[in-house]
Image (cartoon, rainbow, N blue to C red; front, side):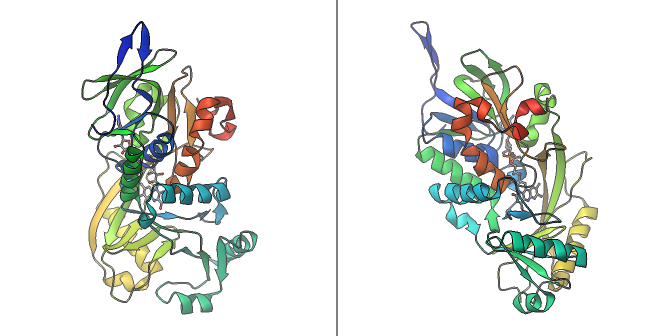
Length: 369
Ligand SMILES: Cc1cc2nc3c(=O)[nH]c(=O)nc-3n(C[C@H](O)[C@H](O)[C@H](O)COP(=O)(O)OP(=O)(O)OC[C@H]3O[C@@H](n4cnc5c(N)ncnc54)[C@H](O)[C@@H]3O)c2cc1C
């Protein structure tokens, strides 16, 4: 246990709560929440493993405000980008982000039209390159139909970033605990009690569940109708001719650091475990070679998988008190956009705690349960 001592007792009949908020889970959601809330609250953040496990344990991720096949802006794009940079800088985690931009090569002439359109609509985020100038600029990239350069994007070391957020939260006075799971909770009207795997029972004003895939362990959370999607990634050796940062987002993504190139990912709606499979490893390697042909000779040096928790149909995060509860909250459903959605919503938590009706309807829990 770091930071504050944990003491929870009744004095003169009134409960002395050790924490304002206990946060369970320190992936992108929990770590961002811990950092923001610890500015003005007494926070305990715990994780079944360590900060930046779960989906946030994928070694590298892309920040790309213009996303997916049509390069549509993420939800509340401008605020999301601002919040990402704000949290990154305030937590002194800037070195975990490489502001190298993200390249989106078009895969067809139809997609090229969509991408050009996106560059016209959001010129401070995206810039369109016809095939010839694109090849000149990024000779390693297959760019038959042209490339959308998402200048405001870049690469994040996701586990390092989560760890930096937790470190910064502790500097603000938060307590943190690794290898400690939440096992049960009770909402007692004006506070909660949380039972931990260490046999401790702690009290706080509220509990914030940021469990990622860990939600599946709790029948109460099944009522939220979340949908988990397994995503596998591989790490490839990088050929010597790739001097510049490679950050590519297409059907797959490629992100490069000193240790090689991370390629992701599969979208598996049905799966039995989180082991990487040969078939997907081969598929990702092939896909990487299509995007960057000089990867033909590269070797797979690592592989893994994580689970993106999604909110079906809405495809936005989910945040708010659980149905029928006042003090047990959930912050999840970050899907494939955790890097932009986590800081955006974490920054709004103090406001939402004070006034739950301020939670935008499209992300509120009631809509889905
Ligand atoms: C292959 C892959 C590639 C991705 N690429 C990108 C990308 O390029 N850009 C992007 O923005 N997003 C990307 N994502 C999505 C991103 O990783 C997720 O949106 C984000 O990590 C989800 O964060 P989270 O905190 O909600 O959940 P998680 O990261 O899963 O964190 C949950 C945490 O809770 C802990 N936990 C679970 N149960 C308990 C319990 N009972 N008690 C205590 N702790 C518990 C876990 O140990 C874990 O640390 C990718 C995901 C995958 C799988």
